[in-house]
Image 1 (cartoon, helix red, strand yellow):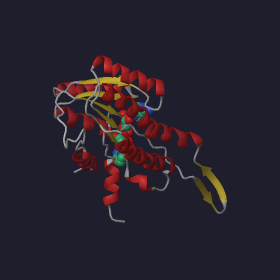
Image 2 (tube, rainbow, N blue to C red):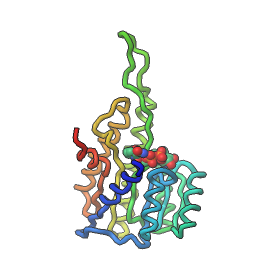
Image 3 (cartoon, rainbow, N blue to C red):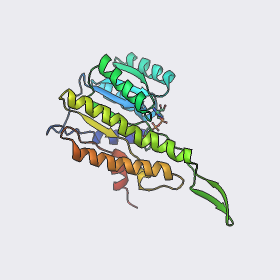
Image 4 (cartoon, protein in one colour):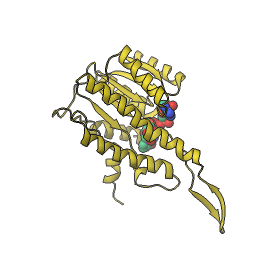
Length: 223
Ligand SMILES: NC(=O)c1ccc[n+]([C@@H]2O[C@H](COP(=O)([O-])OP(=O)(O)OC[C@H]3O[C@@H](n4cnc5c(N)ncnc54)[C@H](O)[C@@H]3O)[C@@H](O)[C@H]2O)c1
């Protein structure tokens, strides 16, 4: 059994949605947006949620992969539409969610899954000589996609849920690296901040409780 499969099963088990007091959510015809949905874990979640009856808005940078993903889901009878977006760009995210609202209706769910890594040691040194340092670009781009992207998409999705007066859920995909991982100053910081963002949102909105699955997974792993 692949680690991806285990991760997804864990995540879906944790996706027990608490909205307006309910302990579960009927997915039939619900519109769920998944960032980074064109491949990998995002696509696997799309298949799983689509089979449970959800209609999917797949958001991704990669237009070709999006087209293939939508075609593959359609061949299984799943209604999915593609939205090309850079989650780190405010105007791009705002436009994508406006397009989703226009073409599909208000979202009931968002999976903030798009993520990247640009691993490097903060400082690589040998015999007292600094050989390499993590670049500002490597730092900023990982924070921008993994953290700011979740903020921007979460803000748009929550706006739609509240304005449509409907129940909803936002799931932020974290990582065990949130506890700190060598060579991942940028990614670990982004995922740890994403966990804090998740708790903050859960405390702020009556309609949404979000679950950072891998974070909980991390907490359950013995040191
Ligand atoms: N794969 C793992 O083992 C693992 C473990 C823990 C956590 N995660 C997390 O799960 C999530 C998905 O991981 P994955 O392995 O499926 O990744 P992946 O690289 O296979 O897929 C990521 C998708 O996100 C898209 N993307 C990247 N930057 C984007 C942007 N700026 N705007 C829109 N889309 C963008 C990519 O085009 C790609 O389709 C990430 O948040 C990752 O941190 C993964």
